[in-house]
Image (cartoon, rainbow, N blue to C red):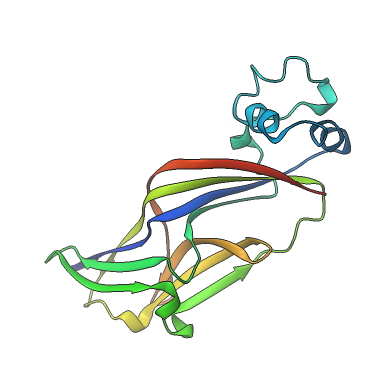
Length: 184
């Protein structure tokens, strides 16, 4: 039975990044509309698409993730990483991602989208964390922070690896801003 419990936190800023494929009809229709109309259609599809032709209607943004969905703290040099020993409430580590040794980070580069798509970015603030239970005391050299690049070289921390075991980030956040744009 594990005797040591640790909480690994990253953040405090991050995002939910979503990419959904679109048809040419959808791209043609929505590229002639304002960004505000697009955002309203993605957030409130039932009430803000009454006059939209059937072949151009969009689904709720939360259902537009057939290409990719990632959630986590921003994978940036200034993102904070701190580790707390839950048994003693002692902070063991408090670093910025950019100050970690190269071997302590890993990046998964996803391929660019090849179909017309909408990219939705919900900026988030809050707690991005994971709890790990170990049979021995925490060793910082066994921790690897994993970021997944969404598109054009930016992305989020989706999980950490400790001693080759993967732990996915969970937490509680609130939206700060919402944006969408097309990739065609």
